[in-house]
Image (tube, rainbow, N blue to C red; front, side, top):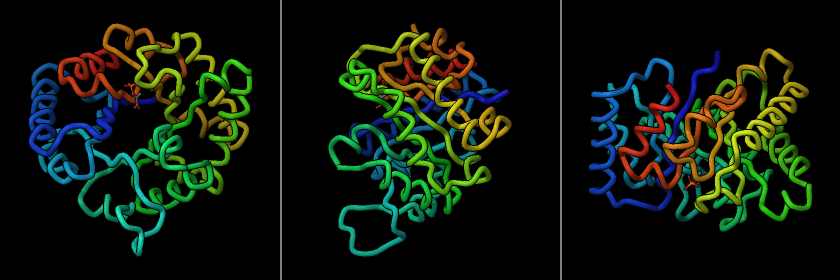
Length: 254
Ligand code: PEP
């Protein structure tokens, strides 16, 4: 039985004060209305708000993480933050390979792999994002693309290290567009990804890996998505910016 995950990716939204009030609101609703025994909740604010997030969530059972990290520990990489720095402020998770990083910042499977190596070395839990574009889906190349993203991103990651890796399937055509993959479409891809993990790591290991769906998840469709056999929760963008919507998605995962 895999524990579900609901993660909120705030992207470049909310200044420090706004972040603090959203964290406080989410924390309050979860404390008063929800249980965390069968779902892991993670908030990913900007780097700027992350130390505050860690402090505000202390003792609540809600986790915090960074939206990215650099693969090197330190050095002349202006504007970057390393995995060890994320770890040092007390965050537990990091998103790697979000499609916006791939699209706007030139990240590829190889860069993602170096970042995953750096993050697992720090014992951060990685949410590794993969997903096809509309063009790739329409030309029926999406299975090859997804397989390459998965396998190249996990190059040299051992079965032991995979305990610290969660896969997030996020079709690019569904991110921020209001177009969600149907639960059948998503389940089909999740099953395919688990099959690829089985080939690489064996059945027992692959069955333990959590695979999240991301792409315009809203409270009204969350339950249906999360009830699919291979969908272990969601990575939520837009809807995570509203405390009530995000909390309802957490409720759907319970
Ligand atoms: C995301 O950014 O990871 C995401 C899934 O965004 P949205 O929910 O807004 O589509």
